[in-house]
Amino acid sequence: MKRVWAALLLTAAALALVLYSGRQPAETGEETEDLIVVGMSQVGAESDWRVANSESMKAVFTEENGYRLLFEDAKQKPENQFSSIRRFIQQQVDYIVVMPVEESGWDSVLQEASAAGIPVIVVDRKVDVQDETLITARVGADFYAEGMEAVRWMEQTYKDPAQLNIIHIQGTHGSTAQIGRTQALEDGLAAHETWNLLTRMDGDFTRAKTYEAMTAYLESCEPLPQIHVVYCENDNEAFGAIQALEAFGYTCGKDAVAVISFDATREALEYCRQGKISLTVECDPLLGPLVEEVIRDMEAGKAPEKERHVKVRAFRQEDITDALLEGRQY
Image (tube, rainbow, N blue to C red; front, side, top):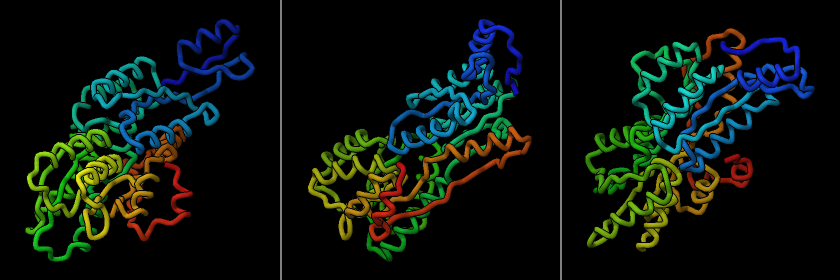
């Protein structure tokens, strides 16, 4: 570890060392606190899920809990993340935590972190590297398993249909969530001859882009198509899709257009209770405590689990209760 341990003789010297090492002064101002420095690169703030994920991290990695958090927003650009990680290496942080925008392109920068002796913890999405030892641990969801929850619901809900017309709205291309949830639907389509993919569009995990894409598609159709299912790769895409569908006269819900979403934020659960979302599959964003468990294991000299998955749960209208909504933290 690159933590600085020193006895400080003068207040001026103490302040100078703090500026150099990233350590925070103790309340007395006479010595530095021994804080674990965590450099964190977040995807951005493109969805409600992402905002909740960031807040979970910030709530855990506080000075009161023994950390100094260097948090950077990549604004959904991989090159920003690579720059952030190189800054963290120069700052000699103790741990790097990264929520990758995309899976590819990580070998070089993670080799630099490894050479510097800094453990890297990947959160939420995955990274595709030739050398798996460059990653200390990954904390997040099994996105393919989430997608298969939705596929099984479709199988149970639409038994032996003459034809099931599906619109697929993808998330950010190259992200683990997009890859896993897309693959699940692809496997479902391949296994059912009567499942018909009307169109696939890019929603980039945002409400606005999905609304624009769905509106453009429906404007291009004459007449409007019969739509049975809209498979959205997160909640925000579902909100945008519903807005566009309703503007064109579609009804979303039972015996109408079934909208499927992922994340199960409070707003999505509200939509589900109203019947506008037929199924929302949970992807828990509150991963801060699990990431801290990895760091605490390493601080204690223990080898952390390589993969930590959160539980997959799916919600339908009948599953939504007041207690569930009141207890939702995101």
